Amino acid sequence: MTEQRRCTATRRDGRPCAAQALPSEPYCWAHSPTLAEQRQRSRAKGGRNSAKAARLRKLTPPRLLPVFDRLETALDEVHTGALDPRAATAMAALARALATLLTAGELEERVRLLEQRTGGEQET
Ligand SMILES: [Zn+2]
Image 1 (cartoon, rainbow, N blue to C red):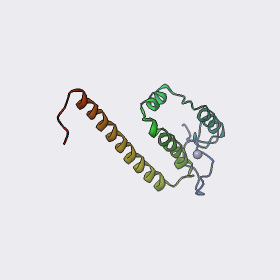
Image 2: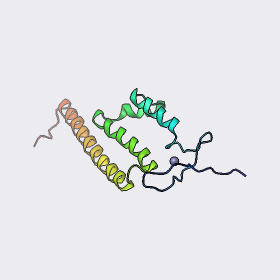
Image 3: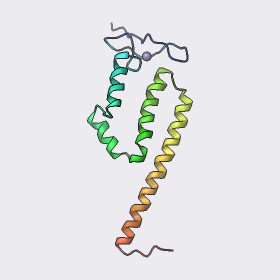
Image 4: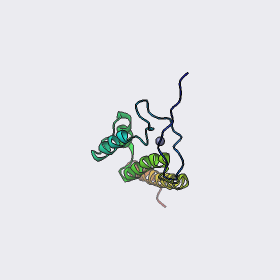
């Protein structure tokens, strides 16, 4: 029988963390001081560990990169109880709106370029 060890940390809202502890530590991935240090380091370097994350970052419009980073941090913060999930939900909604606007603007620009190139008669 495998016993599921729970994280022994206390969330900032005073409730115990319910996440599963890491095999080698009494804490979950979000509360682990070891991992926190690693995360801090990789952030300081501006590096992302996985190739996939790096690729996704490259696809993100530059204007949205700080938003991307903020949301990534918010994910940890919600998990550790440092951030109110409702605040995170609001942040996510705003980020989505921002991304939609930027994407629409970019599409508009590309259509305009295409029309210029083909001598389109869309001008009104
Ligand atoms: Zn925890």
